Length: 319
Length: 265
Image 1 (cartoon, rainbow over the protein chains, first blue to last red):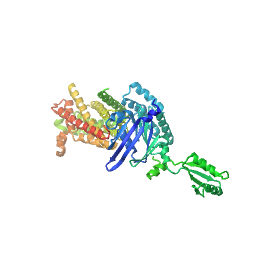
Image 2: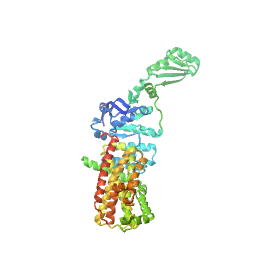
Image 3: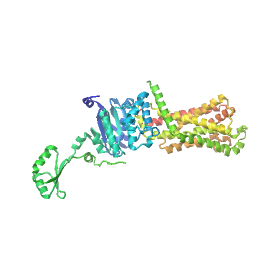
């Protein structure tokens, strides 16, 4: 195992000035990315933002028009073969063989990876076990649920023990329970030290899984940072106080100069940029005789950030 | 491992995959690859054969029509394998599977090698089965052992050529229906516009020249001569030359289309 500092210093993905156009339409416009080894990096954006194009370029499926990219030290252009040896890709569309059983699909991967027969079989049964596919092993994916097919897909990707895994919209179209299982699987992979580049249009998913997020809009990266950093860039954190009666609201509003009041709901919103310190301050100024019914803290979520940066509400759900 | 060993291993893996596929689709394949040519054999021999046979004159060499017909039916059997091959290739290319293969360190040509190899295998098995049925129906070949070897060789070469051609068609079509439709001229039109059922000389002037000189006729004529013990002349060489030309052009076309599919090489 590598130590934590070791991870932080090594680069898994390094991309500079990536551009790609289909005819007149520019799909990637000067994209820079740096992903450290062992990191989960999320590309977040609506449909058509260019997420899949980045994955297809970095996984050697298509070439960029300009720019440079290195994957775990291998140049994407000159050493595509070496790149393929260290990556695993689970695309947006199922890449399982529908005429082979789950077990045969894994064995096929083992053969294509040139694993010796004994290792091939051992690894197949390990992965079937781990991905809860033992009972379905002798059936073809035609009989699988969406979640099972996705699990088989990722198990196939893991057969070769890749050091960098691309997951293109890994939970799109899955039911909530399958999504939870998928998130758990991704967290386990990270614990093993694998680097993950995932794309998603779900803000919650990026927030839950990613160490760092790049927000992509119309082929450009519009923001990049940890989920916390991105949220902090967004003004609008506030304390929300709800009072028992109008008199208490009046009294509190006189004390808090910068609050905005809502007389109908008996609510006072006070900007809160300073976290706990300013919360303590607010509570001290309220005094004992003000009847506070309810107190809540509001921090902006990635939705707000995305909206603020692009002027578009991200697409929430896709079938 | 040397690149050649790896290439051989990858191709064997893809061959294994396609054999598994064929076993899964066995019932479908038996219908399209064996039953259809057998029905054609029955239709043309039992139902139309009396009149056609009498009309053949010298071309029949005094034998029953079935002895004339079988060579053409064998060619139809091989051509009938084109549809499934094109469909299998299209399904691979339009699904996510080929992208997975392309992101792995797998020999580039292995996937096509697997398709073509198993396609030839299926065509040979189907031809053998149809030959067996023809023998049961009264087909009496007069071929020597050497002739039989030549027959197998020509059928194999023709299968190889059409397997590459249908793989190339499968690569350039965008849908399964398109792949099936695009092979219909091979499996139905060209056999009729050849010496499969009647000599091209008896056809209308407009198609006569085409029917007499197209590759299917060369293959049918050479097989017929070998099976019925008639002098084959140079027809086997003409047939093999056609097969080589079709295989060469189709395989270049297929490989170029596969590369155009987008992978960084």
